[in-house]
Amino acid sequence: MPKESCALSVVALPEGTVHRASISPRLRVCNSFRQEPPPPTPRPFRFLPADMAACARDNEGRSGCEHYTRGCQLRAPCCCKFYICRLCHDNNETHKMDRFKVTQVQCLGCKHIQKAQETCENCSNVFGEYYCSVCHLYDKDKKQYHCDGCGICRIGPKEDYEHCLKCNLCLPLSLKGNHKCIENVSRQNCPICLEDMHTSRIGTRILPCGHLLHRGYRCPLCMRSVLDMSDQWQLLDDEVARTPMPLDYQNMMVEILCNDCSTRSTAPFHVLGMKCESCNSYNTTQEGRTQSHP
Image (cartoon, rainbow, N blue to C red; front, side, top):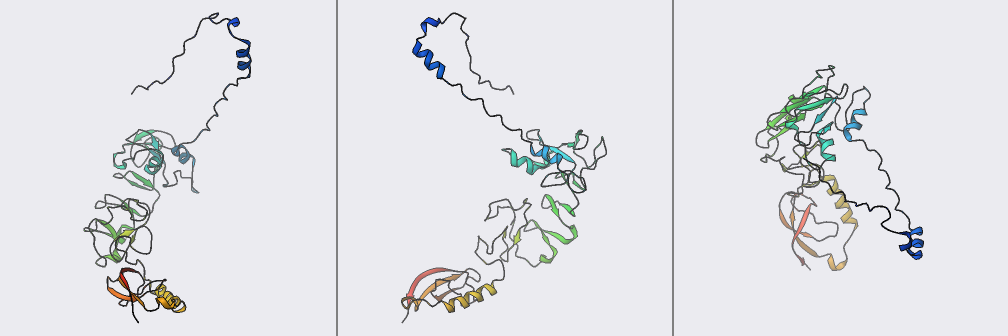
């Protein structure tokens, strides 16, 4: 594609067109004090992430980037630029790299460009201890395996995981038949940090309600507690007992909904929280009006 030109046209006047006598002394004085604009500050040379990654080496002499340890860089099929990995590409471009469409790599040792493969055809450099020809993932050995159900590589060992067909996600064997299935549960963004959970390199937490999230103590979708909060509820019991309400509020009752057991009940109002009479949880929401009892 031809580059667009935005240069201004400058017309040079022949010498003698403007006579010195035609310039007034006042104008000559003004011109003598006029300062030329300072030259632009040169921008420092900045390495592309691929260049930095090619220079970075771990303790065993293997090159890579902050995301992966590998001996090659990928040619992005979208812009034909070389980056160590798709994450380095996505962090520096305005578009995403499709890992599945990568066809060429460049050896970081001899700089030979070749088809995506496990070993350099020119210098026999091994690009990664682990290589997936589908995801074009090169990395050191972390017991990775490619899951056809997930469509991407997972960190194993493979024998410790099984793909749940309904959840459409690889789950530990300890959760086989011991979790609440939600269809395509990982095919959505984390409700807290809004990042994709299915392809994220951040570990996800499986909540008792079946939903997933990256962090937090209760599910932001159904508000149920993630962990066993019984110790925390006991501390709140003690704090409530040490903090009596003013006389005007001591007999006030409120209608609440427990987010943990879904029980609706009436509980004494307290600024520290209202306790569910069914499961003793303080993870409750005030639902009805307050009522005063004599």
